[in-house]
Amino acid sequence: MKRPRKLLKWTAIVLGGIAAILLIVNAVFVWTMDARLERQLAEIKAAGDPLSLADLTHRPIPPEKNAATYLRQAEPEVTAIDNEIGQWNDKEKIPEFWNYLGGERRPMPEKMHKDMKAIYAAHPKLIVLLQKAVECPDYDAHLDYSVPPEQLVTQLLAVVQNARGTARVFAYRTRLLVIDGDRDEAVRMALATFRLARHLDRSPLLVSYLVALAIRGMAVEEANLALQAGPVSKEVRQALDGELAIQERMAGYAWTIKSDRAYGLDEFRSFSLRNFWLYNRGRWNRQESEYLEVMKAFLALPNNPQPYHAIRSQIGRAYANILAGSGTFAQQIFPALQATNDAVMRVQATMQCLRVLNALQNRVAAGSDKIPAITELGLPATTITDPFNGEHLHIKKLPQGWVVYSVGSNERDDGGNLDMHDMANCDFGVGPPEAAAKK
Image (cartoon, rainbow, N blue to C red):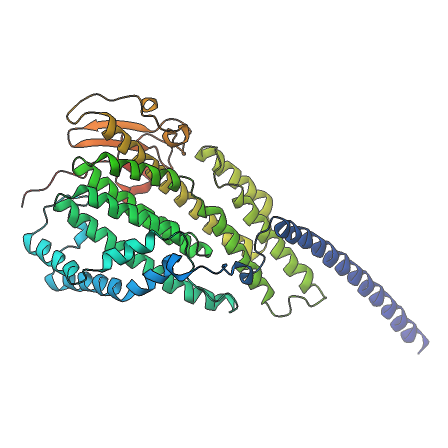
């Protein structure tokens, strides 16, 4: 009887020792992760950046200076036009309106033209109201930042959906103006679309910024159609150049990452048992710390003067250093941020190409075959530099008009091929639509 008791005693001692060691290891792990996370949070706070969704609350804006005031008033009519055009297309069993004056440059049927004009005539005050909105100096959609993160996203989706609808209303209108020969007003509609994107930049989270990027892409397309269609006034060209100079800064990109980081921090705070002292606290703090490292790596990219291959290399090193054996959340956010950065560079490159096109048309007489050096256009070096390879953007002259392009993400000159159906093998830029097809 003595031996079993002695064995049990020594077993208890050994197990107790192992438990004590594990508790010490756990305490050291938790303390290390606590300290690491606290340093990161302190760094964010010292920079004056948001640490929670509540920190995103906008300072009060007088209603008459808030673009959201007028966008909200216009929303019913924006939705009506959007729905009317969509239903009309389905009813008539014809290709979407975008196919006319778009890539295929087919002549618009007279009935379609007449019906589209009638839709806008039924809403005579809408465009004026929307222009008033985009000319406002500030924007606040009055989101409720006190709600849980998922509820904030629901609110935000309604905001970005209205912005998308507004951009389409501008785009439809731009194409009608081009058909009617009012190219100055068509460019002004494109300018309104650019300014709408700038307002949306002030909304938080990646989801809103990706929509703002898409709206910028629409603005580039519409402005390009108007410029390629024929002469525009010097006043309008100056306004377009000024707006593009602002747009090239991509000022909303860094804010988007910071606001999304605040969203992520609130998500981490919502996890049950995350602060339970036995392992959970250290594990979750490590996940949160790695998430913040990913965000920090991408915050270093906005306005990065390096070409695409250097940025991709920088991102790759961040992936290797941060994500090797890392937690789920860092692994999930990394590709989303990478895709956003690629989209930012693509849109930035096409806006630079549009600015070069505007300068070319302003300096070279119509019908001239002269192709000036891009350095002779009086544009900043940053504008004429291809963000994808760090060299000058390319210029080509076709019978239909100018092509200005970046080599794109494959970093290869594909001869000005702008067919983005195959993005791996095309260039990014602006050029004349294809010649009108015969009926």
